[in-house]
Image (cartoon, rainbow, N blue to C red; front, side, top):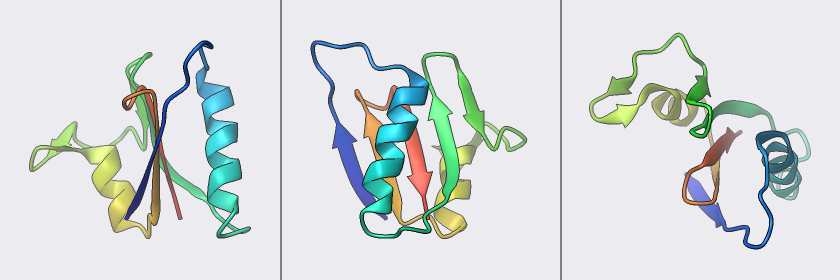
Amino acid sequence: MERIECVISGYSIDFDQAREVGKLIAEKENEFTMLISWCDREKGVHSPCCLKCELKGEPGWEVYGRNHEGRLRISFDDDRFVFIYS
């Protein structure tokens, strides 16, 4: 899976803004991209949320994204917000 790390300085980006920027990045290579999984560490929520917290030391939502054709992991501000796209 390709990994992109985004660092925003001088502005406090929120979850919705980060998701929109992530979508723009993901659509550059695949106009039909789909958000498979995500995590908002600031609020302590992730999706899918019905998974175990960890699978072999990795967050369940991240394993789910990788195992469901996730091709791109976009992280904002040291994993404050993470989005996995197809």
